[in-house]
Amino acid sequence: MSDINSDLSLFNELVEVLLKEEEKHPVADRIESDKLYDSIDLSLNETGMVDDAFKAVLQDVIVSTPKTATNLFFNQLFGGRQSKAVLGDLLAVMLNNSMYTYKVAGPQVGIEQEIIRQSCDLIGYGSESNGTFPTGGSMSNYMALVMARDAKDPDCRNTGMSKPLVVYTSKESHYSNAKNASFAGIGRNNLRYIPADSVGRMIPAELEKQIIKDINDGFIPTYVNATAGTTVLGAFDPVDKIADITEKYNVWLHVDGAYSGSVIFSDKYKHLLKGMERSDSFSYNAHKMLGTPMTCSLILVKDKKQLHDSFSNEADYLYQTDGDDFNLGKTSFQCGRRNDALKFWTLWKSVGSNGLKQIIDQQFDLADVARDYVSNNPDYTLYSYDESISICFNYKNIDPIALCTALYEHQETVVGFGSFNADTFIRLVTINATNSKQDILNFFKVMEDFVAKTPNLTKVKEEING
Ligand SMILES: *Cc1c(COP(=O)(O)O)cnc(C)c1O
Image (cartoon, rainbow, N blue to C red):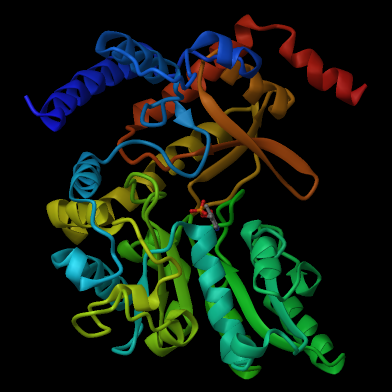
């Protein structure tokens, strides 16, 4: 057998190990970080390894790697496994194209463009729109910020920043906004944090107040980041009301939909993004709500000229055939670029837009199950709101940080915590659409059983309070 054939059969064998492990130990056997290098042979040595030992190490790694596809993983904003998307990603690895030119990507270019075109249609962007697949949501936000900067101060692309640009986001937004302000030469101090209302949405009146103040102080308002699904509460900033302001003051409006922008696929929930067609750019991560493998992020722009103006560069050694519409390197940050589109396309092609809609709606249905459970049980306090797939709660006044950590350390379930204003709570994210209602109820049972058999947990909070 050729190398690739025998490695593919080894791959299948290892995947069997993984799938069996996921059933037996939905939360992986945890290795304490200070024992990691003593527990598995991760060393790289002068001589290679013989086949059986190699396979054994790979199995060890698989067994103790955290399992993100199981019904007990609720830690972050991804989880589960959409198998048709996995198929596409495996094919992308085998094909190993680079998305910069038609010459080396061929029909993969059309696959990427078809996803972008349909996404732009769903947002309501017109015929001049386009986009690209950056490395993730942070990079999507960065590209949006750079386009906004260049639109406001075109010379800065050649001469560097000289104008006092300021940018805006809500205090509940993703932390990439601060880093990106630094990377783009705008500076973290020139990022204004706008207060959020009691349910975590940016307050438009506060935004306008700050913009007016900045204008009076000689600054140039340049960019507003509105979030579709804030990282902790899953709140949607009011895009329509924010667009009234950005249009009035001629400021770029970006919608960061990394978490929940995929609601564009749902007739039932896309109203949460009312006014999105008025934005200048929009990003969403298919590896979050749509469940593709990591990473699959899109940045879409209403006017593709902006993408071109900020990201294209001539390169004779690269662009040797075909037009710009087929040479996607002209609108990307990277040069060599992984094919993140194919996994999304195989999923979409196989289930149709109706199937994607069901994936989204299922997560909200599961969220309703969790919210109902929490609000109908006096042992719980609920901190989150309707129309979000982040369910934030505390149980029996137990310190949420201690409880999440103990659940993880005892391999019960993997779930995280978050804070909003003065409260800290457990955040259950119902983003895995392959889960059933029973899986959600099972999460609560696992947690309650664990608390019942772990009496010293309650003390933590009592000690903090006392
Ligand atoms: C996850 C997330 C991001 C970052 O996306 P990455 O792909 O992890 O870089 C940005 N914004 C929001 C609202 C997110 O939830």
